[in-house]
Every structure is written in structure tokens, then in C-alpha cells.
Amino acid sequence: MLRAGVVAVQGDVSEHAAAIRNAGAAHDEDVEVVEIRQSGSVPDCDVLLLPGGESTAISRLLAREGIDEEIQTHVNAGKPVLATCAGLIVAASDAQDDRVDTLDILDVTVDRNAFGRQVDSFEAPLDVAGFSAPFPAVFIRAPVIDEVGEEVEVLARWEDDPVAVREGPVVGTAFHPELTNDSRIHDLAFFDEMAVEA
Ligand code: GLN
Image 1: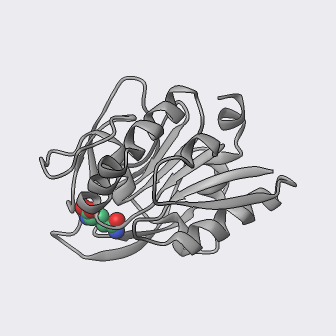
Image 2: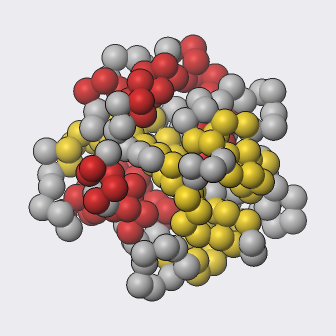
Image 3: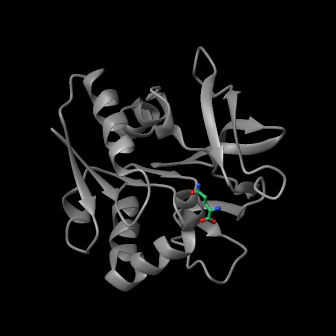
């Protein structure tokens, strides 16, 4: 039994829960999904998901409830985190925006709404490292990753910009992997050898 915590301030909790269960089923692993709204439940979770939404609102709630430090402790223990879209902004070391108090669990500099200035949302087939077929990536007011630290592996790029990255137990995507039936990103973050070893 894998206990997956989904930070449930806002965003697509049920879609992420379905994707994690689906990925678990492929590994004969039952998944219990816990919605995280207060401190106290993160320490019992094996894996964590930081979904999209509004990064300012998410970071404010995490700080107010003291969930921020619990997530940092989770990562320091080598346990997996998947951070998507606004979640990626919150996870970053630098969001280039004072309104977002980032967790600094992923050594990347992001530009909020960088794609959004040109186009609000789009879907694109992405080549992801290790995937045999492209991943249908849905971008919604997505951030761009401007810089990655030395320890960060780039898993996918869109027009030269990194849009999926991994640093140790933390995987971040600029897109929303929960909005299609394809659960390979959740699989990669939570059930991959790397995640298991970590
Ligand atoms: N651009 C949004 C933010 O800055 C994120 C958008 C999303 O999660 N779809 O928080």
C-alpha cells in the first residue's frame, strides 16, 4: 500500500488521484490518496503531489499551515514528489516573484506565465527521456524553466526550454500530466526505479 498525499488547496486533486492509482495498478500497488490541507499528514505519506492552480495561493497556504517544512523534510528523507505547473513554481529555488515563497526543493529558476503571455493553453506531443512514445502534454498558463542547477536532469524540452526535470526524488513539469489518460509521468515520479531507490 502506497500512501500518496495530494496538496489540496486548489487544483485537480481527483484527476491526479486517478493517475496515481492507475500508475500503481501497473505495479500491483494499491494506492491510498490523502488530501493535504493541514500539517500533520505529510509525515505519513510515501509520496507527495503538488498540483497546479495559483502558485501564490498555494505557497501562502503551505506557509500558513506549516506544511512547507513538512514537505522539505519529506524531500530530505529522499521520498518522491511530483510538482506540476503552479506546483513546479512553488517547488523551485527561484520563482522570480516575491509573492511566491518557494520551497526550494528543486534547483530551477522559473518564469511564471511565460508561455501565457503568448498563448493561454495548448497541447503538444512531448519526447520525454525514457518514454517510447511522445507524451500528450497540456500546458495551461504554464511557467518556463529559465535555468537549471547542476544536479538537475532535463527530461523533456519544448522549443528548447526544459518543461520536465528531475533532481533526486523531485520531478517537476511545466505542464499538467493529469489532464489526459496517460499516467506515465506519475509512474516515472512515483514508481520508477529511481523513485524506489530514493
Ligand atoms: N501560472 C500559474 C501560476 O503562476 C500556474 C498555472 C497553472 O498551474 N495552470 O501560479
